Length: 324
Image (cartoon, rainbow, N blue to C red; front, side, top):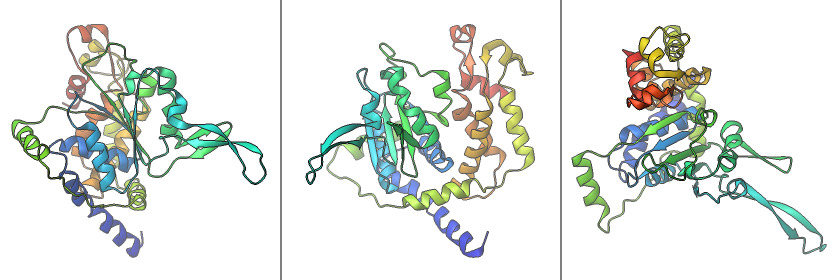
């Protein structure tokens, strides 16, 4: 890497702590979740965000988009939502000069840098599947024509873990498309007190734009260049393979799991570990990166059996046993 290029990357990476501080003006606490969303962005993936109502999921995503100079769209998923409501549809228009009529593709809300798919499990599988091509290919196909999505592109889907009546759980194949499965917890007592004080008055913090969309694309390119040793890649490979009951040496896995994570989990763990290194202003992956990210990367890629669910065993407990 040339000196001029290296200087540019170091300048951009140095803005990341300022970015987190800017988001912290609006979002109290939830630092782990904010870090994981930024890691997904740097790694070029997408997130599934789970938390009870009132934990500022929407505000968190919108605030991050503002601090990143990225346009933001929110799609409220409902049982009657159609794929065309997401990707767009063709409308009939008339050329005022010739009088001829023609179809024009009217782009839907998916054409934004940051898309919040709110309560994704409330819409039927046909509509959920409309996100698949956009997530994987970075484009939308309509009427045989490909429409490129903007870069960078990030989908954050949310779901409520409490109320499951009338919902459509995401199939395992679609869950695997999400790079990270982030769980939001309740704030601490002090954080909740600060929320009450900061959100019930007239003051509204002004956010500064810290990173441009091109700088984010540069960071995504840099992320893939971060060094990771062969020993750590071997550790990731063994960790992922150990989640599979047929090949695992862990009695815990054999007892509680139906099947484990696929190769995409290993790719995600390598990429996200590199992204976490960049977020912490490092250019090399350390074991802590892997151990921290194993939970959000593996928790939705391990399927527990009926016995485990009956005894309230969670995928996080399985991951914890494997990391031991």
